[in-house]
Image 1: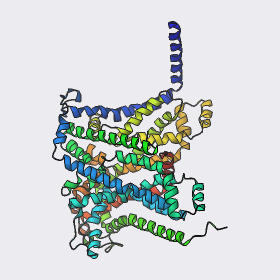
Image 2 (image 1 turned 90 degrees about the horizontal axis):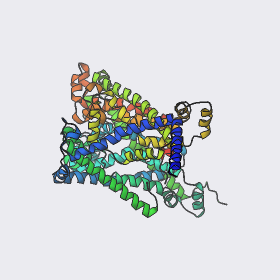
Image 3 (image 1 turned 45 degrees about the horizontal axis):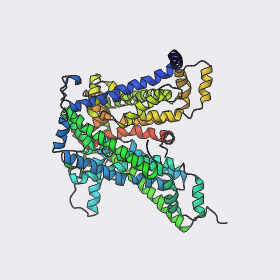
Image 4 (image 1 turned 180 degrees about the vertical axis):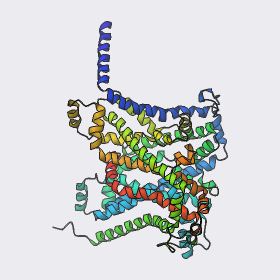
Length: 314
Length: 295
């Protein structure tokens, strides 16, 4: 009996090797990708242990002394904690509340354009800002918002203000600038995915709605919108999980010492503490706290939407 | 019978409103860019007075002359062109190759491989461990720091895989009978028929490479190796354009300002991408539909 089993095992294993050999090129192609991921994705995950150590640049990670949860405690006692969290959450929530529905609305209205050529034209223009970097956009915004810039000119002409305002130098305008410029840049681009989903809606549904006497608005609300609910849900889950991800590039470009109190967010804080001040262990601990909370948000959003409308990421 | 084509008053109003709305959005999108453009073509010192909205007041290309005469800017531009070209070619070929292997159903261990990749979408080591890794790999101040850490993306792999799945198996079987190995099949048969998705990923990655300033900012100290976006970031954030303006000599010095140099550099940096993207549009919309999440 036992002998027989081992023989079958041998046979299946030799069969496996035969199959593996026959797909050696395929395996080589796959494994080279796996090796890349092990080095560039998984090695940094191992590197997270420096959050639990007193790492310095001179010694290798393995020799650094353990410090337990010291660096995590440090963050919770950090005087910057409250403002960093407030800014990160504040801007992200604003982006979620205002910036998330707008591309959906834009896609709905764009889809209602009768002329195909006009639709293509609008689309082509609306993607354009997505292709500009935040560095360029930072420059554009600085020009607009300058003392002699168009915003000040306009507001003075309309007699809303008397003296030009240095918008980027005042914390109270920062969140608004960030949210508005983000919408300006990504509105058209974010709408693509909804437009793609809309093209999948069956024309029969619109015909049926027309026969029932539905107008254009009614069709948008009662046919198109429910038909792309799945896509909306998936993107909403992703947006919720990204709530602690401030748009790093954008904020780094727009922030300066004067607007610091409104512009300091977790990602930028990790960068400043870690790279500029070389406090590697502490910055890694802060980054890890962020990643864990984001992961929890992702999983909760996923399970909630799964229960509510049976759509989920996984 | 009523005609479906006949518009009711309500419908016509809706159409008019919608057309107008879209026009407003187009204007709001384009005007900020136009504003920068006309100001960059204006005499630098005159532009500082403001008030230029539609057309240059004192037309001048001196800012552009100063930009093109500046070795630092031209060097940075060269680095950007090189990293965008090399980075995009390598990224597309490498990611597509791995994706092809992952897309074959007979691949032993496919589920495990996919799992390993999927985890990377949701969890990463973060900034500092990645920085330390790049340092330990000796890539600080090396051109390859732009290429190798960006040569693969699991997200792009997913888009490739779903495209490769749609290719009829008969194509591969015919090649196999002719004695081609999997690698040969990939680059002689699969890659040529996959141009829409290749173009899409190339565009995405090309834009990433062109716009990325962060890599140059944290991994590169040697100014000869910094890309134009990093250069611009330093100009925008630290207004070192004063120095360029100050370095401009003779007649040029009177007509350029740090602000106009900045605007001209921004325009020069943006033009290539604006030229490329309308040609790629048909590809990436298709690519989006392939890669789009299905609800």
